[in-house]
Image 1 (cartoon, rainbow, N blue to C red):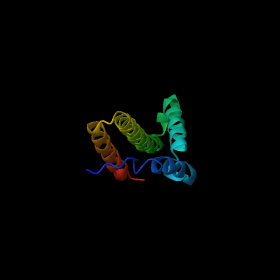
Image 2 (image 1 turned 60 degrees about the horizontal axis):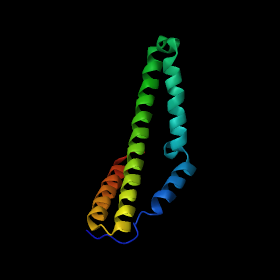
Image 3 (image 1 turned 45 degrees about the vertical axis):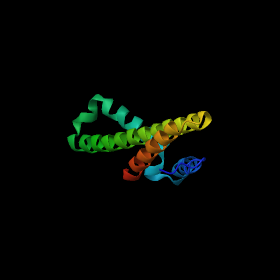
Image 4 (image 1 turned 30 degrees about the horizontal axis):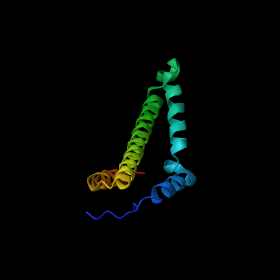
Length: 117
């Protein structure tokens, strides 16, 4: 595995995050979290279950958003962990840590690529 001294994603992740936030829709992470919170408030209302068809649709949307937010959170954490391990390995001259970091980042990249938007 080739490990350059500067990660190929060092600015790409930051740029992508900015891009996600600015393009709206499903890429708007903050809006997805806000919508998820709104849906949680709705489902907590005792009258929510009075309309079963509407409740079913809302719960389905809630489930989809929850999975997306959790997947994005996991991917973000994996990237941050990989980046930290890479930086520590680079500072210490620890090739094994650098290789482990690259493997973790490759795994995170694959997980991000599998997300359906």
